Length: 165
Ligand code: SF4
View: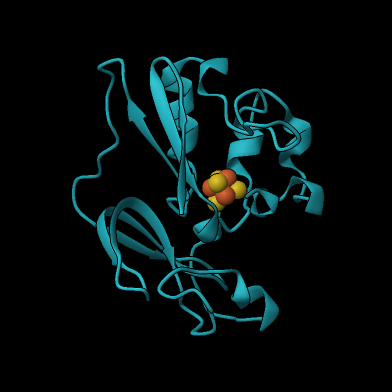
């Protein structure tokens, strides 16, 4: 279920069900994305270009944005599929995803199950970690934020966006 956080210039939406808590959002701008606050997303806390750039780092499509100020909307020419080392398939493009319940959503980014163990197919739900899945692929490059480099450490339970409802 996608929740919408509307700002003045940009609207951000979040689908908790497909977030795999890599925390690019929290590292990217802790003013906009803050877990111990409700709402946890405040798009007006930064420039819309910055919000859009950080949302585009979310590999899963859990975070999406829609510019309300006439700024550039997200688009990917062509479709690209990249296997992540020991992890899911990272897909960018115009991805029409049919969920198990039959609903269809078009996403610009998605992480799709590659290990076969996800309980939330076709999406990754981090089960590859539980089964110690091993397969070659690209290492996932985490962006280091100039804003708060301290958060470049592994995410703790209290920083896990999956705690949000
Ligand atoms: S919303 Fe979830 S998947 Fe997307 S960047 Fe934040 S923590 Fe990662």
